[in-house]
Image 1: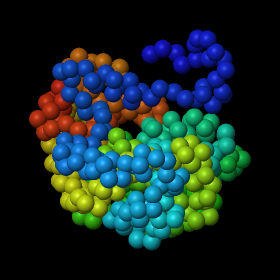
Image 2: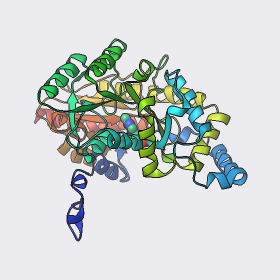
Image 3: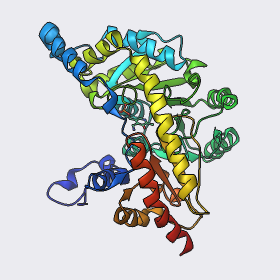
Length: 406
Ligand code: PMP
């Protein structure tokens, strides 16, 4: 990788730019394109099961029938039609009181995270995150010179006592804590889910401590069995700024996500979003609207749930069969990821190269929240078929066994 700070005019970069890093996950994705490798690294959705031909006809019809609108600038908040439909999607996710007026459509939920960091965080402010958490969010917060502080997680997600203790410690140190960034449903990378009986407790703590919850729920509908677990936003419309996305239930390449913003905060949020993109992409919004209107999108979600459940089960069976003693992992009930932990002291980063030699790629744990997770790694089951999952795990096992016995 070339340095991001060497060469002509790089001295003009802002102090903020010095915090913008190339994520380790990105390096891994580049490697995983090599032929012959099985990538258990990328959390890409399995788009092969979308009705591509029909979508092509829909796209053509949009251009033919509404081309001037589809190719023109639109409103900064997004079209009313799609914002209304997004409220229906959120109803399926468990939020029944969303108002289209509080919805801001963004270029993926990633850009909504960026807007949130921009409007709430000054340099030195603290954002609390689950430990581990989504690397894309970490990169966003770091770019705004925010101090990211991890909060402990156990098998039931964020630990309320740890959240309380961390807040007390930070207050005592004179820090300003602005946000709790949380993925309560099927965390990326850990697959963990916040237990139902902790949800209100987390909200109450944040309310008492005057901390806004930034809830990220791209995997919420992808619970393998039963109804989706209602997000935190379903319990509190004031304390929670909710982020949603079509990336995991439809098409990440369209870059359509959204924020459901508490009424008191929405105007600033909307203006900040508009300042970045002017408006979300008109054509893509129309394509998503047509998909939600004319296709059985909930049927597609049901299909994805059973497909990913099957792939997850396959990976769990392969792990049970091949992994050496000393490796442990969780059994997720939704989403895309399984989180493996090796004995302490083993760093999975150098093992990546041995994995590549053996023909399999994963994401080393240190990519997520730093050194504390260097003995963990993330496997994704979403984008690969059962055969590749079995073969990938079979290739990985001796690499881990060798590291454990060394
Ligand atoms: N949040 C989480 C937890 C994610 O895993 C991802 C994508 N991997 C995103 C946000 C970004 O989603 P989008 O494509 O909507 O920007």
